Every structure is written in C-alpha cells, then in structure tokens.
Amino acid sequence: MKEIVRNLYENLLRLTGARSESAQAQFDELFPPVEVLSQEQIADLRTVLGVSIENAALFEQALTHRSYLQVLDSPGHRSNERLEFLGDAILGMITAEYLFYNHKQVLEGELTKMRSWLVNKNSLAVCARALRIDQFLFLSYSAQQSLQRGNDGMLSDAMEALIAAVYLDQGFEEARTFIVEKLLPIMVSESLVHDTNYKSILLELVQAQGAQAPRYNVVKEEGPDHEKSFTVDVLVSNEVLGTGSGKSKKEAEQQAARHALEQMEHSSPHGTP
Image 1 (cartoon, rainbow, N blue to C red):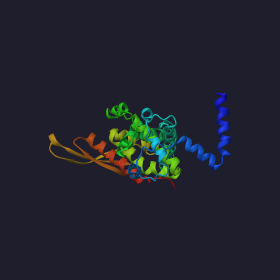
Image 2: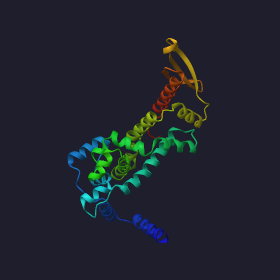
Image 3: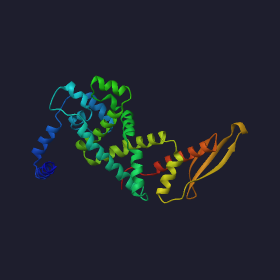
Image 4: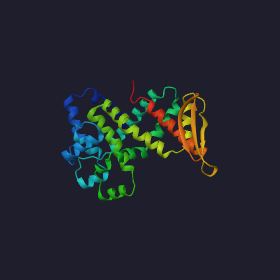
C-alpha cells in the first residue's frame, strides 16, 4: 500500500511539473492509433454521437472490447476498460450536477435515488443501442455471439468508455453537453417505460421536494357498466400536473402520474446555470 501511495505522489509531481511535450508522449503511449476505424466510420460515429472527433485513437480504444486484443495481437494496444473507469466517474459527476441544479429542494438521499434510477447498466445499454454503438464495437467472434444473445454489459461498458473519450478529446464542457443533451433524455424515457409504478415515482419526487402527496380526481366517467372509461387528473399543491385515461380508475391514475412525470421532466431546463 505504501508503494502505491508513493507512486501516486510521484505521478502527481510529474503531472504538475510536466511539459506539454512529455504530456503528449504519455498520451500517445496510452492511446496508440490502431487505425481500425475507417474515415467513413469516423464520420458516421461523429454524426451518431453529435461530437467532434480530433483523436480517433481515443474512440478506437473506447470501442475495443478486451476480447478483440487477441485479434489485434499487439501488446501495445489496450481495451476500453480503463476508459470505462474514467467515463463512469464523469457520468456520475455530471448527472449529480444536473440533478443538483434542477431539483433544488430535493435532499441528498433522494438525489442519490434519482441518480441510480436514471444511471445504471441497463440504461447505458439502451443508450448504446439507441446510438447504434453495437455496430461500431470491436469484438472477438465469441464476444459478438454473446452480444447477439443479449449480453448488454459490453454495450454499457463501451458507453462509459465513449464518455471518457469525448472528455479527453473535447474537454469537460463537451462531455457535459453530450451527457445532458444526448444521454439523459434517453435514460429518462427508458426509466419511465420500464418502471410502470408511476404513482410511486411521482409520490417520491413530490415528497422529496417538500410538497404534499399527489391527489387523484376522477373528472370524467363514460360508457356502460361493462365497458367504462375513466379520466383522472393528478394534482400537486392544488395544481393539475397530469391527466390520464383508462378502463379502470387505477389505470387512469397511473397514466395521469406518467403524464405528470413527463411534464415535470420537460419543464426542467437541460444543463446548468
């Protein structure tokens, strides 16, 4: 342990006193060009991600699964695992910042729940598929077969690695824009679709903001007894936040809560002040 701490200290001194030439040499050592992405693929990836790409080697490494190193058979090349470590930290920080500024009355414990509700391996994999990242991955044949069988871990790992690549290539502000404008909307939609207990989600959010529990009012009831349709408003602090319809009051209440959650998300400004 002492040796690890000593190395960290020496590296900090080297980093703070490093000249740009030595820093660039270190960068080149960490990200040697593999040249497996064609110019056409780089242009396509640039369009998919919505970011500029200056150093293609960063993105090649971000898309390289460890299984592909056997295919490359080149000791100097690395998989995306280290970039994944960095991207995970950047994603967590920017998501925390986004929630901190856009949910000002929510306490720390609830903010932590909201972050885990949004950012997880499943939502990252959904982002990767939405952006067609699976079409860019460098995998061995067996890993490719595993991906086709539904092993989405490789996708979520690559998504985190790409976040790190954007950060290292374009800087923190571009990484923030990429996450807030490109990834978080997909994550929110994914969470709403797959967590169908919208009433519970809405209750947690409004109580975390210091408001009273939502109230549900039946505003319309139509049709014969065997085929009734209900319309329900959900109110928070006497304000109608959402309206939903269904064949039962319970279904209508769930749809009203879902509508309210969507309205709350749309009304929150993207980004930070």
